[in-house]
Image (cartoon, rainbow, N blue to C red; front, side, top):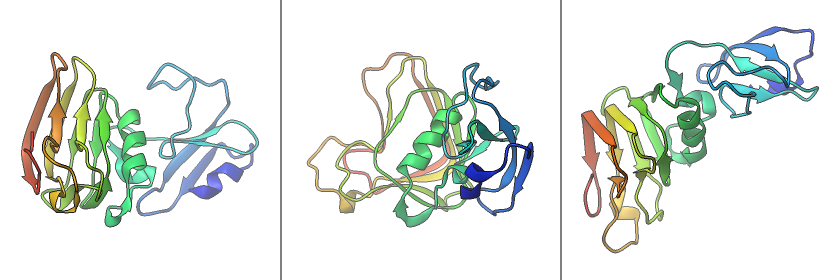
Length: 193
């Protein structure tokens, strides 16, 4: 993946073989429009990479986006917050797949509708130690969030806050729909939702 920035201009299509981040990428110029957003391409470390000679390498895909494309490790140690943020931004209104593993995150602000699907209860989204804040927060009205087939772990035993922190919170935001299917909440402080 890191070598995409040095792909010569004459290569229009590149195949990257990597179990987590691999895929087919095509070259785009600085003025090409992203059909998913209707605006210029933005580097995000998962579906769009900048090239040294100008332009971008853009992942070709249809359907769901995988958080591992954005560098998430899911090893229970690495801070996967930025990978999740970039994946959530790219997945706006779509589906984000989260393979089995333990993904450590601090706080994620969810600003647009999304469906987050795990691989069962061994897909764990776990709050980073000493975050001392709500873990998953919705901050936009009219948002629909669906979590399916995963575990949300508040990691309360490794936080030092008092009371009032939740694993998932919608606070004073109108018209938000949150749906949880086959989701296990564990080790939360004040409450899960």
